[in-house]
Image (cartoon, rainbow, N blue to C red; front, side):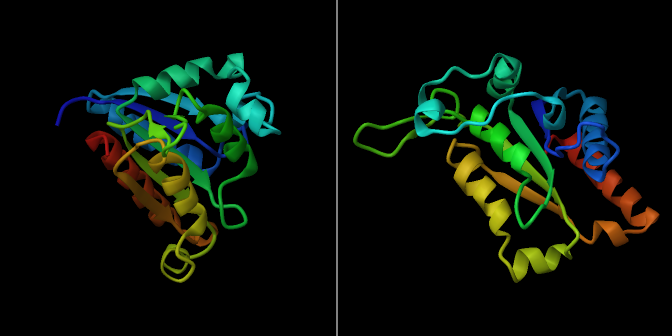
Length: 195
């Protein structure tokens, strides 16, 4: 498997850093860079952009200037890694607002006049990395991961990304140091493989 261009989107809304999601992203990036992959990183918590408040704004307004580099990195990427903590069963509001800005007509898809929209991000794979207080097995198997499925199917899959793989880290508040070190190693290994 050759080198890839990988976009890592750190979706934890706290721009100060220091959270598990930040450490997982760092581990993935270190593994990917050590294997020769080209890594581009975005920290959503450090970005400043307005909320979209209407369909017209979503369809017609220009992308905020501060997100042009992110758009270019997305288009250049072979693989996208999106990390976020599960808040109230789904992704944090700031990350959702970011994805609404980024995954617009002309970037993620082209509207069809009399047919289903045409996906513009085909040929890219993705990985969702989700941390949560709930045991991951419970979230996946009993609740059927609705917040993650909405991102997978409604955003990434809709735009043409495939396959979209998932990595869950549950019971994070109760995790031991050894468990956290194992998680960081797992992320580093995924980064090395560009997976």
